[in-house]
Image 1 (cartoon, rainbow, N blue to C red):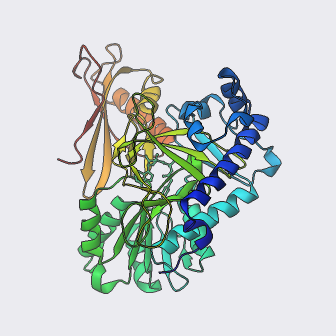
Image 2 (image 1 turned 90 degrees about the horizontal axis):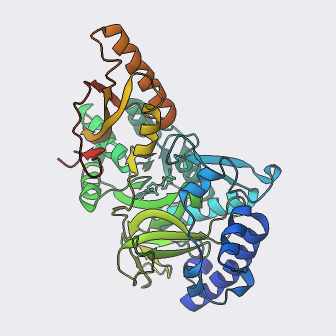
Image 3 (image 1 turned 90 degrees about the vertical axis):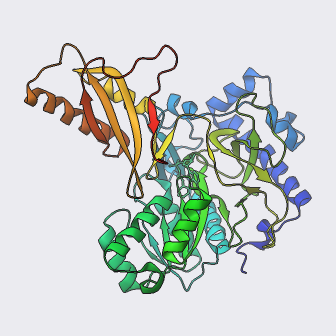
Amino acid sequence: MKIWNETMECMPREEMQKLQLQRLKSNLQYVYDHSEIYRRKFDEINFSPGDLNSLHELSKLPLTVKDDFREGYPFGMFTVPQDQVVRIHASSGTTGKLTVVGCTKNDLNNWTELVARMVTMTGIDSTDVAQIAFGYGLFTGAHGLQYGLEKVGATVIPISGGNSEKQLMIMKDFGTTVLVSTPTYALHLAETAIQAGIDPRTDLKVRIGLFGGEAFSEEYRREIEKRWGMLATDNYGLSEVGGPGFAGECALICGQHVAEDQFIVEIIDPETLQPVEPGQPGEVVITTLCREAVPVIRYRTKDISSLTYEPCECGRTTARLSKITGRSDDMMVIRGVNVFPSQIESVLVDIDGLAPHYQIILYKKGFLDDIEIRVEISEVAFTDKYAELEAIEQKLKQQLYKTLSLNPKVKLVEPNSIERTAGKAKRVIDNRNK
Ligand code: DLL
């Protein structure tokens, strides 16, 4: 099986650790010199970058969180002037503000290299035709995968998300062999195909799926593989560390190889914030080693996983992350879009006529995740005039779309009809597995 970059992917551990330490030291100095936020964080604990002598000492440094991006919105986390930034991407923040990241030319080259390694791991090469059904836009998924796939010489079809009938037509007519999408969309597409009389296993040529952007279980993977007759691979990343390319599964499907020459990954206990033993579950914390535009030190992803350092039978020696099993905060991922309850709340409180009592219900529509928002009308606005209620509902829908880039179902309910609790309000009701 081909390995894209043997030097980096199969490096003996001690050498890798040496490389990481050297890159970490220069990166710490770099952020200290170029980022007000990090200078402040380091000064607060009297840490000077020259003080670090071993990789273990990294765990003494302060964590970076999504709110650091929010406080510095839009470009506070950037460490280069705008004329060196060649690309901007973004993902949801915890409230109305986006989490903004960017790339220099070197960042784009490194990113492309990482994704080239990742797609090669699954068995993809220049003979493949890859259909990218991630939405193009500020999301890192579509662009990241496109550049890496092109680097290995695959033919890319940048169709973007949605329009399943067209996806299937193109898949059939252009001979697509690789599907790039969220796992839920893959299953939805298989279902649409079957309804249209197309059997994906025999009538289409798709042999590998590159799935990411959201979590999916092993059962879900088997379901996708059964319906498509393909190898369904998982890859994980997040905008704050550059998007996809951080970690991905090889064709042996035994954990996601982390690109350790460019990132240091730690697993910590989300309560005590202390490192856990290899193999134990905890929160993934990532330090970038090569990113120029937006480097991050100890970024708390809030994603839960575990790490093994055993070399893989594929020949790669890089650490492997298990599938992401959940989150340590309340972020929901709906069709690949990150949604925080706080974003929804910030929309509701700004609309006259609505009370700040709401519930978010997650459910399945076929294989796709969907979201319904039930919100109380305020006592003052409560009326039996249909037109007035309709106007409030329309406004709510528009504002939600603007904030979330999703069209949730909206239901206005009577004052006091949503249960009040003495303790923490149960805002999110997840019916997806029912
Ligand atoms: O989802 C980057 C990406 C795109 C990765 C395409 C892989 C493929 P964000 O929009 O910033 O970036 O969302 C990041 O999505 O913290 C996880 O909670 C979740 N997530 C992404 N990939 C996976 C995965 C991209 N394979 C957030 N398994 C992360 C589980 C995932 N969760």
